[in-house]
Length: 439
Image (cartoon, rainbow, N blue to C red; front, side, top):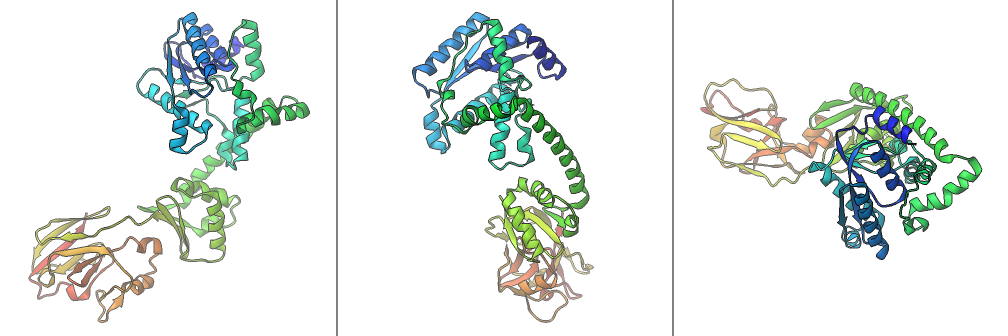
């Protein structure tokens, strides 16, 4: 195994001589084997041990064993004690998840503070199979079949190509001592149920299931990587971005196999789940224009020809604009506020507003528009509800929720970004202009 180990770490570039690493060691057979493989391969390393204080005297004996092992190998040992049960209670997670959080948070700290090039963990091929099976049972997508990465965010797993049998044979040949965690024998955790109850049955029926499943998962992973390659090309070709909105035309999904996956991998980073994707497709088929789906800080609007993604409306307390102010910031939009003399040519860009200053009553106010709001849109003689005005323009709901109005007293003088009020337009009789010009 040593020769295979050396070949693997050097050909893959996982570990390099001249660099110092930290080995996460529990005292079990896998991490003890990795410690000796590193030593025999002349890789510089120190040991880090987590004492979760969950098994009483057994936990203390594990720590004592590791300190002695480090001393015998002339390797530095760092230990950290965790109050795992208190953390579990405060965070509201399982004991297993609490230990995982505490362990990896410490590992991240060690790497961040430059104590090693990375933290080595002794996960092997059998652990990988268990991880993938657990992911599948949780309803994972294709990435769940990827399993654990060999190197990600400072965590390095150099034993993934090796089986438990490989490791046991190496330990026996080297006559190494190691500690058995008694909790591994109990089927209290889902992983242990797989390890102790399920996989032995599969092994009896199918032989070397770890290797066979590992090969199958590897092929699926390769297929997944191909999918994501073509997914990114599809998204780049179909998605239209006008910050802060993204538009996906219905036509991009017509006749496309796997449309649920395409939608999910577009929307998941915005807090949408796979069940919502099914509901979105059903709503599209039903022609449910205007229907809204909520993600995490984002919403998806089914419009007439597009799926429109954008942020949910933030809390807006309103703004006051004094007569002397020269800049206006409305959420993410910035405007110059200019005072100009007579004889100005009207700016017809709806993103900007030229208003007769003498007709305005300062301070002006900016607020969210409300149902029932009315104004006289530029060019019209009659009042019109803003809601009707936006319907006429076919403004999607997701955009309506972000719109603001500029008010002078009780009057709406500008539906910001769309239309000024006809009563406040500049004319040949205008002596001073207040000009809101978008930057």
